[in-house]
Image (cartoon, rainbow, N blue to C red; front, side, top):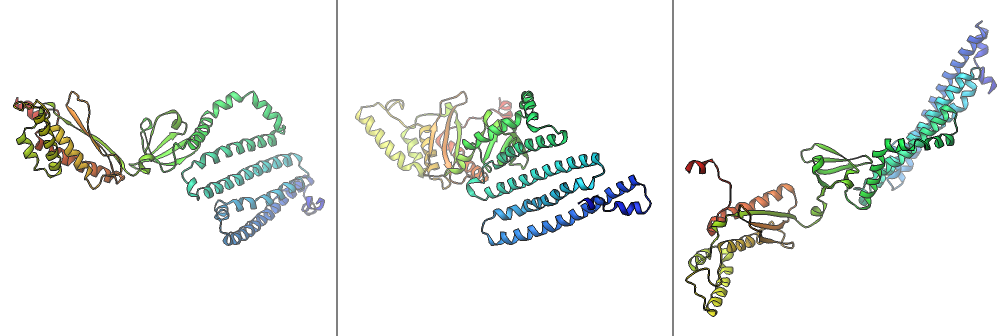
Length: 415
């Protein structure tokens, strides 16, 4: 290699150039020659490895080797040998210039460390993509764990770079960092919180990729598209993207709709408010008229029969409707609504179906429907709920009832 160190030196001195000039020109010529050799070597090794690995990947059933090629793991690895060669060649290229030798060697060692980090990153990316091919891991925040591991790798890489540049032993530098640990904790506070949150979110299965969540504090209402170390990305239904800090998932309250989506129906829970002064007892004539409503004909026949028997048995004076047992228009209406909802084709009959009367308010008595639509899709769900309430609102006058609503300008003008 001694001859290689002065390969062009004799040629330049033979041209009559000064000794120092010949050394500089020799150095530049060797540098260009080395780069040319390295370029050709890198190109050859890259093509060779990719061709060999591609043929191997075709024969295997696993997708992992295909992902290694896709994420450029083989390409990055192919650069190792050329870099190793150039590091070995530096002492011979700069044999007459120790200062340049030291700077160049440090520069290429730093690049070598960065190359190793790039290889590790591409391997982790391949692992991430491979793990996501399994159905049970598709909705897990794999990205968070990859980022955590890469943070440790980058810390190690930066420590190595510092040791290369300064010449200080890495362990002495780490010891010195102990005094600055409080500052590091402050700088990496969000990262540490995000890491802890990612673990808790995964272990407790709080959020998965694809879940529909509502987070009012951050204005998020849509599907989770990404969970990483620092943020959770939610694509809202208007196609906007909301970014939420990962640690907010464990420090704040949010709604996850996964339970509804995994169930057999989507809950309908809405009330209609009836005016108090429209509620009354029903006379026999009133009941007979209501028997024309087919959904409750059987119910009214049975109830009226039971009520008549009870009142006769107990000698109840029915000159006043308040005496004894009686049907009320709101009670019959409530039964009608319940029967109508139970017979609705879009309601899941295997889940709870109930029509209930809530405590009276200053506005009236709420009659609430509590049921589950069999179709969970938002648009269809809203259509089903509207269809039910269209009907029961229009049915209110048939029972002599009135729906509460605030007075409008027409009423004030009439007064």
